[in-house]
Image 1: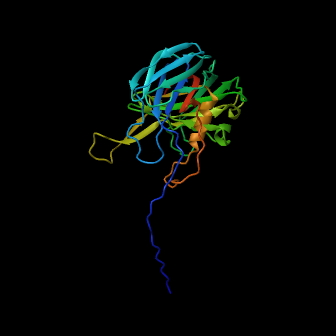
Image 2: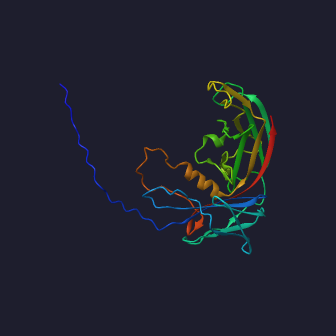
Image 3: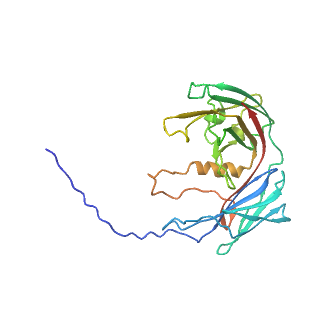
Length: 304
């Protein structure tokens, strides 16, 4: 015997009163030693209702204050970006202040740029098997660090394969590295650049998770990409392209970059999570949101 149960569905309006203290500026900037300043401005919006068509704020006045005394005005470059030719100096402290009509003035807490770079050497093995794949279209880059201070420092490590029309980062720390196996050691971050959108991501590593001096931190990265030909009408025609070089980024980073990235990496993003308890966040912007962080990096190009 089969029993069928029919459940009726009934619609009704529900009043949801979520706390909201008004639109705030969202300030984001990566202060990279030896590079010009660039700041992105967006704004928050009510958690209910339509998603705004535009989040960027392009009518703001933005200043950067160096070491509490030298103030430089930034120029709008469109799309919420504000720039200056002023170069960020290692060891200096910076504050970013932004004002815009309809918003409270937002200001970052002071951020000090790491005074020194990382001392390291690297070795590369080309055309090796991947961590999970036996095909020999990977490179293995081993980093040997000097003078690691695990109790105080955080590190940024990025490795990108360069192709004709794009850069791809699918770097993977190999399994015998501490950074690849311990919890709370790694965080990833995708950077945004003016007119280039989001760039291949980097990894932030806690100092205490770095290998001891003399032991390598090894990274596997794919050096061959495949894609369908855009000029061939037959969509089954696959083009294989080998990377021309790798770009290696290694440097010291501020702790707030690691902390923010780790929290964001753990945010639920799946559509199954439509109703959530309040999620943890991180900001160093007063009267606003966002993150101003810093690094002092070395950039190396490795021919393949």
